[in-house]
Length: 464
Image (tube, rainbow, N blue to C red; front, side, top):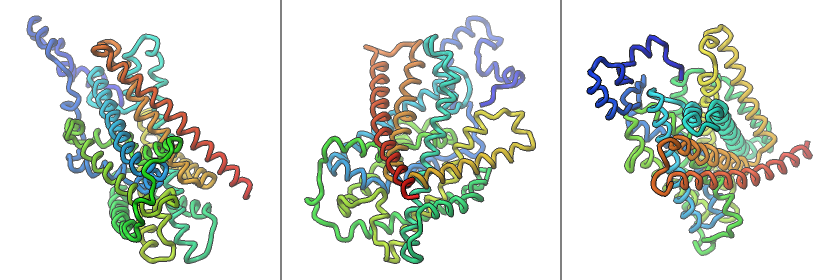
């Protein structure tokens, strides 16, 4: 967010600071005692989202390839453990999103600005903490931006691998076997003109078409999930705990979309309705939880131990209906790529590019080059690391540990430093527990996924 100009700051001074008024001293002291800056009242959005729009947007941001990987997650945990851990994980992540948004709102109050980005909020939180961390504020903000970019990069790489594998299933049947890498290259060429669209409003038709294709595919795939169901006794209810960590990585991928969730809240007409017991976020999360449980249970029940990283890869290759399903879902995911890549471009060119530099004639050219490089890099990762399950687990573990657990907990610790942590320091204990969970989960989950990806990379090099 750009700093206010002197004339703007002076014009709004009486609004933001009761001490700037011409009231008698006693009145001013009374006003100061009860005054509390409300960021929501000061926030203006050009085209705000209604509560219903926000609900639908949240579903669009979260429901995608992750829900199709839930059967694999249940294969790693068993049905009973899968249901319990899905619910617990959803509660934990939702609670942390509440904590994150509340902390960002508190940062707005303390700086008396209507809105801040996540990196800005992290920087402000560090500056409000102990003296020895205040100097780390700018670095922490940059680090948060890097985490957001890496998370979106991994997500886009997963999308390319997912789409390539499903298109390959169709292509192998009709034109014969072709190396998956060629499909990735073809997808990059198809995405190039779409990813060069610089205005978010021009992506709306793509998002609408993506939604139609995705939900059509989800409805049609139910035919295969309900046909030929074996006895439930043939499926394990509880798997060994050693396999549960893989469940967390995959399940986290289907639930984590912090950047998108923050964007939705920032563009609401009534952002105060986003949180709360019956707020937009909780209602959307509840719907997503039931959707994940449905696909996870039914997919594992139907395909058992043979379930793959995406349930679309388990349905028959030679039937017209299955090919239509794969095409619809894969194309819907493909059309989502420009939207998720847009987050990276926003972080680079909105949060960290100088305003004067933006006016230069070469700015558009530089942005187009960055977009092309980002697309090519995700394509390279998709070619050399085609293990969809491992990539999914890596993105889930990385984003969950950093954005959902560590970041909100650290922000809350520093923001509460001056005013206390409550009775028996319960806030501090809670935040330290979240940090511990985030560190353990992030280290173990990422280490397991990276080890598998390195193995696959060596195999790929050996085949060249």
